[in-house]
Image 1 (cartoon, rainbow, N blue to C red):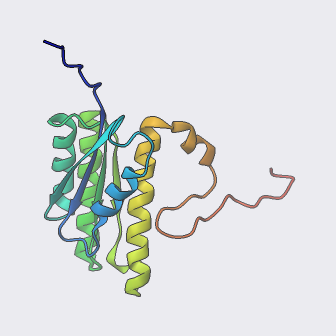
Image 2 (tube, rainbow, N blue to C red; image 1 turned 90 degrees about the vertical axis):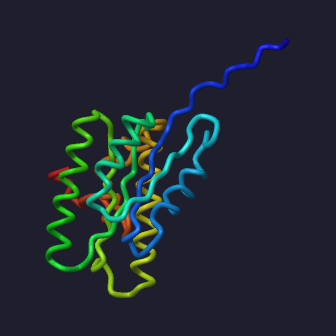
Length: 172
């Protein structure tokens, strides 16, 4: 009888998204992670969908504590009403609390419905922000030097980069 080789334990990256978002942010994040080196061999992606962004914190915490994720990307869309913005703030506080409780990064990725009036522009913001934060999660785990190289460069997720401050030679 031949001994079966044990496969090495793969790192787990969590993706949690919502039904309420008007764009499939979870698919964009998972698609981006699937293009990263080591996908399927070095790391796998676990994913869950919840009703709305107020449910993201518990789902992310469960992906960490129950399912062993090393990082989670939490994706949601607050609406444009004032109460939606207040609820988004509260949801963000919940995500921060879950990070502190688990000592594990949870990247909050919110796209507010009123960030763009044109549906095509808004869709590009959803896609860009979801993908860039998924890539950030990968870099945090496997290539942290990628983040360091971009420090101070005004890198944005969703819209064009702001770029670094243009300083006079006296200040720089």
